[in-house]
Length: 427
Ligand SMILES: Cc1ncc(COP(=O)(O)O)c(C=O)c1O
Image (cartoon, rainbow, N blue to C red; front, top):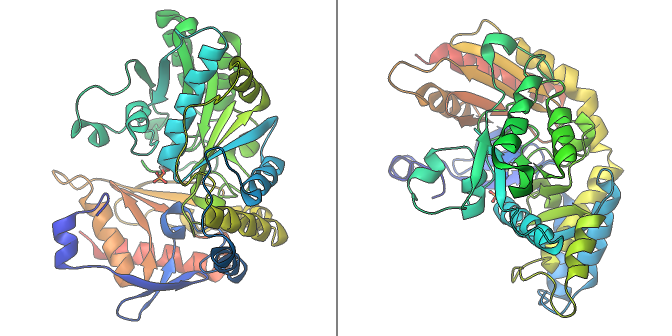
C-alpha cells in the first residue's frame, strides 16, 4: 500500500466502500464526513451525477484512443476549456495521468525548452525544502522530503539545489492567510544564481502552498520576489498546483490567488474531481512555440504516456470543469474562507496545539511532537477522528483539513469540533 504502515493496516484495516457528496461509507456502514476531499482532490464532492454519467457514457462510445500520432476531440476540448481557466498567457496543455507524471513532464519540457533555445547547459533545477512533487525520480530529486529519497539513494537528477522552506513559527504562528514574515527568504534564489550562474539553471519549481508537508503558506511578497528573480535571470518558474488548483484556495489557481503567474504549471487531482486519474502540464505559448519550432520536422517532444488524454479522463475533466463553473464552486470556496478560518482558529488553546494556519479552504493544526515519537500524536488524532466519523489527513504532527468545496457550515463546525475532541482524548 502506498505511503502506509502496511503491517499495522492489515492488522486493523480502515476500509471505505462507497461515497456520496461530503460523505464516505466505511465497511462497517458508518458515514464518514470527508474533511480531506479524499486526498486533496475531490473538490466538487463525491459521485457527482453529471461527472459519473459522462464517464459511463464515454466508456460506451470510445473506451480508448491511442495518443501517439492519433487524437480524439475530447482531449482537445478539455485542453481548450482548461486554457480558458488558466492564468495569464498559459495556453497549451500536455496530459498525463497523475501529479507525479505532470512534474516529471514539466521538468523535461523545461530541459527541452532550453535545448530549443540553444542553451543546453541549463540543466540545474531549484526546488525547495519540504516541497512535495510526487514520487517520480525527477519529483523526488526536486522535492524536499528526505524520507522520500533516502530509501532510493543513488543518482537522481545531476544538479539540484533546494531553497529553504518558509515555515517559521517563531515569527508567524497563528497566521490567517499569508504570514507576514519571510519574503526575504526568496533572496536565497539570487544567491544560488550568483553561485552557479543563471545560465546553468533551467527552472525553479515551487508549490505555491506546500500541502503534503503540512500546509506551508507563502509569506506576503515571497512568490512575487521569486518571480522577479526568475524574470531578471530568464529562469523558468514552475508552480506545482496539483493541490492548489481548481478552487482549493478560493480562486481558480494559486497563481490567481497570489497574483503571480508562472511559466509552467502542473495540475492533477481536482482536474477530474479525482474520478479518473489525470494530470497535466500547462505552459505559456512561448515555451510551446520554442519546442515545436526547434524541430525541423517529425516528432517535436519525445515524451508521452499510453494514457495521455485518456477518453474517460477527458470526459470526466470536461464534466468536472462544468460543475465547478455552473455551481460557482471557486467563488463558494472564497465566500467560506473566513468561516472556515474562524472555525479552525477556535482550536487555539486546545491541547498540544502549537499553530493554526489557513488559506482558502485549507487549514492546518500543528501539534507539538510527543518527545521521542515524532508523528505519533498526529497519527493518533487522525485515528480518533476517523473513529468519530471524520476523515482528516495527518502528515507528521500536522493535521491538514481540506474538505470538498461543497462543504456546509455545519460540516465545517463538525470537522473542527471532532478534531478538538480528539485532541482532548489523546496523550
Ligand atoms: C504538489 C504535489 N505535486 C505532485 C503530487 C503527486 O501527485 P500524484 O500522487 O497524483 O502523483 C502531489 C500529490 O499529493 C502534490 O501534492
